[in-house]
Length: 351
Image (tube, rainbow, N blue to C red; front, side, top):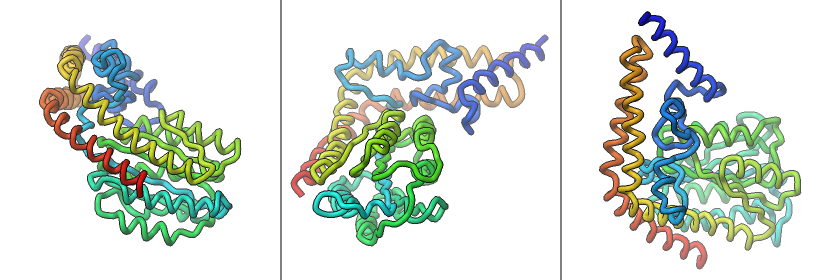
């Protein structure tokens, strides 16, 4: 009888996992679409919406705080930006008083010079060649001390090649390796649509629902209607922002928007933290319900399944303890970050 119960439990968990992550390499109880720290499989089994961070929503003062869509534990971690620039042959095309590439270089360097040093930056060039692996180059891995190297590399770029957007987005998993659970941003700049047979919309969705979970910004440089449609779909399908650029003023505005969103992000955190006791109440309710579920299932489980459940329980315990302690740290960190971003915005606009 006990073996039949174990078999049934194993089947149920496997079925849930298959339905939620049939096309994913994730293991059971690791996929977390809403990035709230509670795996999708577990939320479904305990009556929660696996696509919504309910503790944050309930403690959001009726929407007055804006909407943070991630686990609060991430907010005190470093902020990383990956810039991805189109280096295809069409970037030689005229735009304004120069070329698309010339304009991109000018504003990118201005943006890089204005970023706070606490933000870690990486830079990728794609479209150097045809559709092979040699079309993509990691010019600078994500890090703090690479600004001057990136700028010198930008100066040396010469357009020429095709546009493997999907391949580049898929390669981005490598570039965020080791920092998946931090605050990640991806900025994609392109003057053309996918030209190597890939599916960039699927690629960005897969990246978004992974642990990397980047904020996505897409910029279209002098694009036609078909290209605009695809690039804006890449942004919208990942909850990101698309900016259409026809001149230098548009590109400056797009990058200013990145600074403004980051500043707003930190202000929203301060608002949420002011309601932290409410957030912690709802989070604790979900934690306790999850613990009760795991306790019941562990009593019936054995072997590898029991080990999976025990590991998940330990992870939830660690996360809950950290959430209880993180309030004061968040307040200090966010106040400093808000001032830092406002100064960076001023430098970018006046430079």
